Amino acid sequence: MQTNVLDRARAIERPTRDEMLQRTFSVQQFWSQNKDLFKDAWKEWEDSTGQTAVLDSSLYDPKLRAAVEQAWEDPTKEGAVKDLWEEVFPGVYKTQFFDPDRLDVLRDYLEGVADADIPLRPPYGISLNRGGAMLDERSEGHLGAPNFQTFYRGLMDAYMRPISRLLFPDIVGYDTQTFGFSIQWQANADTSLRAHTDASSVTLNINLNLPGEDFSGSGVRFVDRDTRQVSELTFAPGTALIHHGSVAHESMPITEGERSNFVLWLYGDDGQVPRFGGSETKLDPRARWSVPTTKGDGFAPF
Ligand SMILES: O=C(O)CCC(=O)C(=O)O
Ligand SMILES: [Fe+2]
Image (tube, rainbow, N blue to C red; front, side, top):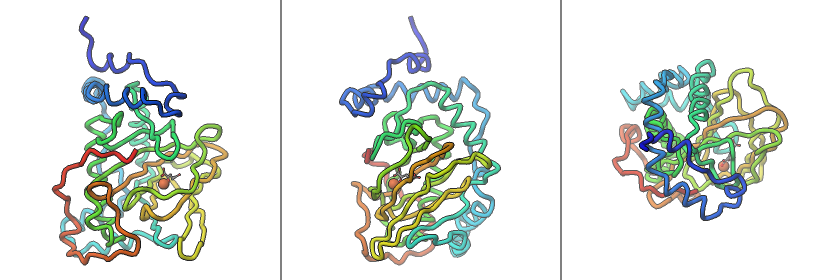
């Protein structure tokens, strides 16, 4: 009997939590063998469910969006983008990234994604985050819905890369490749993450909590390698932190409620990241506000 790809994807037997936690070879095989099926299923899901939520630029904070759009039109005005970021710890900047009043659109969409019941691969980097999903098309089991992928691409190309180049000039040239995942911290489930650095040039960490969707704990503690200064930073709905992947950080335990974030990475071809204390390329603003022609290399850090 002929069944459609969506039904086939939904019916497929999935790896157990235990297998995922143990990272058995069969789990890896599951994602690689069903790659094309899941890709087709996401397309069919989007077409057949008449997804009405449109993920577009209206999700961004209006001030950030206006400044970024102006910089794309006239890169000499990029200073207005930089001015929106506050250095809240040495080498860590914060801004209002998404509009808190529009976040429900994104969250409703992500709920629809979960309800689609197409297998999604949780990030198993430093520790398995069972409520999260891989976002970049380089990752097997990623959120492959075309509408989401268009939004994600715009976020990386139109926002993250030029902003990163502006705040961290040394990452220029180490920014061709994109990677991303969502995470969810929840009391009594996945609650924290030990101190680590990211294998990225730059990490953009955006909070997706809705206004009033409160949580306790779950700050991110940063450590300055020169001074050993330690600060715990907290997220309000739609705010983002951006930092070199080399800045050590640790997610403190969540004790109440939930916290959802997008964690987005840039790095160079072959996983290259800038050398600490390396030289900075002087870039013409026009070069900063551009998209590299290099293709994704298909390599996934985890
Ligand atoms: O808890 C956070 O928001 C940070 C997560 C993080 O550092 C990571 O997933 O690499
Ligand atoms: Fe991290």
